Every structure is written in structure tokens, then in C-alpha cells.
Image (cartoon, rainbow over the protein chains, first blue to last red):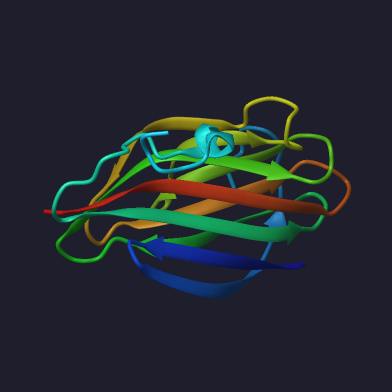
Length: 34
Length: 131
């Protein structure tokens, strides 16, 4: 399934907003990382 | 408070409260909904040429009780991680000094171990320095 990531990045006075749509994978359990 | 933040922000104030010439504050706020049992790595930030990022603090929270796992990545390798739970349960943040050099990509992955959708918020803070 897809997940939508809403992101706000601040560098000093500069603010950037972006959205990333990511196709997710099945989690393998604790310790499996991604 | 010396950092200029009100007291109720003290838990999330940057570890480095003073900046010298060539330095600037850096932060990322991420919010998402992760389907049950899913995980994924998203690239968030590429350190610009001539800069170095020192990530000094990160924390995560979500609205549903139960553990999810978060990992901060340098390119394709996990460099640190945290448990993500509802706010006020326990401290889900960590402070440190994670250095990212120019061209390196900071990414974040979330591993939803629950059988329900989770609404996740993650905050990363640090300092960008000219090198």
C-alpha cells in the first residue's frame, strides 16, 4: 500500500514543504530495519 | 530561557543553543499515515555542497498506542533509531551528534508493527554548518 509523507524542512530562514508518496513494504518485525 | 524558546518547549530545544557565523538551525517535521504491518524508507534531505549537518535531536510520536520503530538513515544504512509511541507515555526522543557530510542523504524509515493504521509525527533537529 502507499503512504503519503508530508514534510517540512527548515534551513535557517528558508522553509520548504514537500510531499512524498511511497509504496510501502511489509514490515519484517523488530530489528529488521525497513 | 536562554535559547529563546518558552519553557514548555524545553524538551525539544536544540542541544546547541548558540550559533556562530556560518551556522543555521535545521529541522524536519514529518507526518504520515502508515498502513498496518508496513514499512518504508523515504529520503528526506541531501546535505548541500559546502555544508555539514549535525543532527542533535530527534523524536517521534503517534496517536495510537503501541510501538512503532523509526530509523534515521545515512544513504542506505540505518545510523540511529527510536521507538515511536503516543505522547506522554515515555521519552521517545534522543539527543546526540550525528554528522552528515555534503552529498549524504538523510532518510527516515518507519516500521509499523501494529495491525492498524498509525498516524505518525517525527521531528528531527540540528545545525547546518559551513565547512
